[in-house]
Image (cartoon, helix red, strand yellow):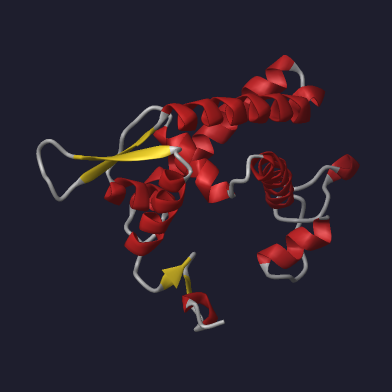
Length: 186
């Protein structure tokens, strides 16, 4: 697993427990711990959403819509997707009866997206499964350890909000240029 984390970071030798290699008593360093935890959480989420015939990005869409009715542009920004990608994502969810587009009362060009009853029901089901599985994952921690993990994770997520709020540059995915295959050239 550590080797996969090193490959994920771009290879090379780790420089101490804070960056890579296992530190004292076999504990992972910060980078490996975060990468490995990310892998575990993504695998857990992937297993749950596939049982409901969803992708991770579709589940993220439903999660965003739990407590708000954003515009298509706000969704695109939050999910770091371009206009055509968010349109396709919402189209697929709408065909499944999970979301509804509603014209804005103040600007006819603007559309808000909300969950339907079926979308809310599915979101609650997935939330319950995620809560159960993540609680199981964290069950080896003390109550204080779970509290500290929640505080630390919240701090990291909050610190990342300004970066995620910046608009994406067209033609780029996660900081890399798209290849012709990435544009449907398969």
